Image (tube, rainbow, N blue to C red; front, side, top):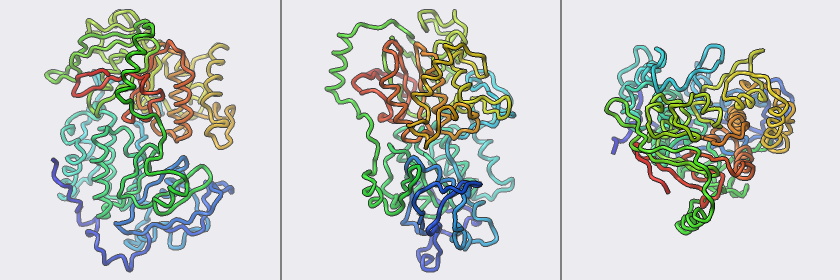
Length: 542
């Protein structure tokens, strides 16, 4: 077991919490009868006045929930106007601790939806991780994190970096290039980087997204230790299928136009919710598995879409995938699962043809032909695909060269990343998806589909970008659809709309591989879903 985290940072961070401080301490946050406005707007975001007070007490911990949680995070970051302005500022306690410093400079925010910075907002080749890489792609995790430290950082800070990477189980990846890290490993590194800023308050929006089931309790335990010792104070945003940690005592539950704040049990009870407030599909019981097996025997087998035998991927002596056998047929629904770093992303890159070692596989057949006899673009034009890597890489230009929502969806018709003129039939297909998944009457707060599809993709909120890229994966009605963490960043209503579409509207002949660490996200009854589970590069099917 890793050593217990010692949360005493450098002396500049302040002293360990002392309970005698509570009598004279001002509240961490204080909003009294406040209305929240976007800057430049005279219309309040919420119908009700906001009364929100957080005590700077280690026994009080907050989580933000609901479709409107992004608004509350914007309030906490100073990106919304509160009227009347809170007396003593939004963070009275931080001002009390050091009146010479702007409190907002001591508040760090990590949303886990960031992307690599590319000049001009253009596409970058995320497949570089599998082959030769550019100089900037050779930066290791260690180099990246050490750059986050002060040039002459105190020795205690460097010790803290070692402790954090050890506790978050990324110490063994320190000398790997950043581009080679899995999605879950990258998210844990992002948390370390945020902590190295030495904030007094750390806002974490959806910190559990992309983490496997074994890493979640470890991370939550670390966050609790940090919060209790006020180095830093932790405020989390959770999705509706996240179990609220026991140590969280208070919640802010926000819809699009109302917000309720207070003790956890009281607020959830008033809203008819619970500490786990997602009502998705449940795990399949053995009887359901038996029923599915019988149903599979009775149903005619669809044509083989993809087949691999003894698929192996190795980097020198290190084997990432070890003898994978997998056949995907028309109409099948697969749940690909495995811990962070188990090889899921590498396996998917073999299916899409992105990985250069896919050419070397003697028994990899895609759409009835050996992989080595097909170009990568030929393969990808027959696959609908979305992943965290594609999300980060997708072009986000603004101005005349920027892609509108409609144009971004249309790039999926040809597996490209730039605008291409479309036929009337192709535009009709985009219309179908916008009607089914767009904001009008579903999740858009009165927004019209016709307005939304003209917006620039680059200017959309993260959840809407995720939904657009899901639509991009669906637009061509591909024979094989691969959805890797497709719902990341979406609010609850977007997820509900997307799950319903995937459950009810796909053609029976389309095969789907769905990748998620959350069984509840799978859109189909578990009795109808096959599973491929990766553990240390080995695969089992159920």
